[in-house]
Amino acid sequence: MLRESATFDRATIADIQRAAETGIYDIRGGGAKRRVPHFDDLLFLGASMSRYPLEGYRERCDTDVVLGDRNASYPLHLSTPVTIAGMSFGALSGRAKEALGRGASEVGTSTTTGDGGMTPEERGQSKHLVYQYLPSRYGMNPDHLRMADAIEIVLGQGAKPGGGGMLLGQKITERVAGMRTLPMGVDQRSACRHPDWTGPDDLEIKIRELREITDWEKPVYVKIGASRTYYDVKLAAKAGADVIVLDGMQGGTAATQDVFIEHVGIPTLAALPQAVQALQEEGLHRHVQLVVSGGIRNGADLAKCMALGADAVAIGTAALIALGDNAPHLDEEYRKLGSAAGFYDDWQAGRDPAGITTQDPELADRLDPVVGGRRLANFIRVMTMEAQVIARACGKAHLHSLEPEDLVALSIEAAAMARVPLAGTSWIPGQPL
Ligand SMILES: Cc1cc2nc3c(=O)[nH]c(=O)nc-3n(C[C@H](O)[C@H](O)[C@H](O)COP(=O)(O)O)c2cc1C
Image (tube, rainbow, N blue to C red; front, side, top):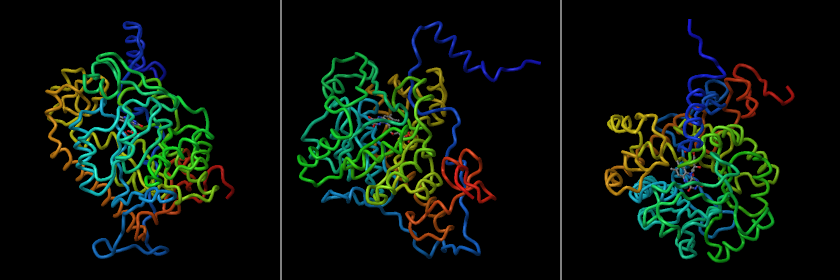
């Protein structure tokens, strides 16, 4: 009998062989592929006797959320707590950015720029547009700060906390190069830290500076990759953030070293309760809103994030899939690229047959932004309705009323991380009985 080694399994052997042949490390898009404790390891306790459920078709369950009302005169009022995560123009085509804007606006939520700046396609179609202020400053334009509805200072991403972005030369076309003031066709690495500050005191100054130049109108978000979450959230909140965006290790990226994606950062499930604790201790939970991302796929994930204390979620990978990424009808083309529909993650390569993660004009033309936007809007509607189904079953008239008491965990690891009891027990590992 042939026995596969658990240590040197097929994928490991293939990795060693690839490294030996090429002498370069693997860069890819997407998030962590290995299994880590996640929202699937939690279950809701639907109401029966001790709690009273709400009637699905007759009783309201609201979904609206306000983001950034701590200091800004114009906080964002969203109809659903599902927002679109920051994804760069460069990683994505202009038409993909337009489709994201169309879809988000149709359902009353926000979209976010990314490394490389603001495009007219996205600004034009986005009712609520968050402008990212990144370590690289690629595409940073003070006029765009003023044209945005909120500003997101990016300190890190869940896929690569401590690391900077990458955009490979094949995606650096004349337009992308122009926006980033970089040479065409040359691999670009973004900075991993901001050039003009070294710590939380400087962040506080930067937040004030951004508020001043936008007349205290716009919420200032701070985005962190999940690692030392408890301390990072405390520092960001004390520095004056109106909203904290917390991105767990399953979070997608357009292009990063595989070793980084799989081995740096902590799971979204582990990070979220730490962030909530940090805000609660500062008396800022629900005053500084918490947006959580990293592997959010459906209404159940959304409801679980809300129950654990998030105010909203952000989706990247799921939004791209909704637009048409990895579509089954493109399977043959994905196979020609050495992948398959449902597996394609070479977003760094710029050859995406779905026309989403590309700058090739012929491929990009394949995506109809109106159709893509409609698909995304449908998907967000479904996510929202799924979360409402769960909330009503738990007797909640607003998604924000979901609470940790509505949850139990299926594994000891998930119970310890989420700080909810193991199903069928009252045991929360690490807490006194
Ligand atoms: C194609 C792509 C491009 C991205 N570009 C950026 C970026 O420019 N800035 C940033 O902060 N995060 C970027 N991200 C990360 C997302 O903002 C978000 O943190 C992540 O996608 C959330 O995880 P999910 O993909 O599992 O939903 C990107 C992600 C993807 C998939």
